[in-house]
Image (tube, rainbow, N blue to C red):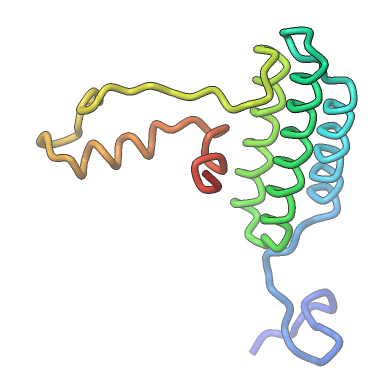
Length: 142
């Protein structure tokens, strides 16, 4: 049995999970969280109505809190990277289009070219694969 590295041994002598969040990743996640709150503080609705601005700010804050709490126990580095990519994409899209809500995509039924055959299962699989990164958590929560 290979020797354990000191960072893999927990206080009770057990093994810690191999996939841990690195310090750089942790700083990146916390930086994204802070940037979302800064964005919400400065947010202005495109309609110019104060009620709309308040609703959109509240949506941004609630969405960020909910998704960060939901994903706080992730240890898989690939999943953490996907969440970071989704967060970054949603921030950029929100700033570009001036809307805080995820932009929906519209695909006609049976509109994707299947790999083989024209079965419904292959269409569902292709739809799942073609979904933009910024809509992944939105559909899980909705």
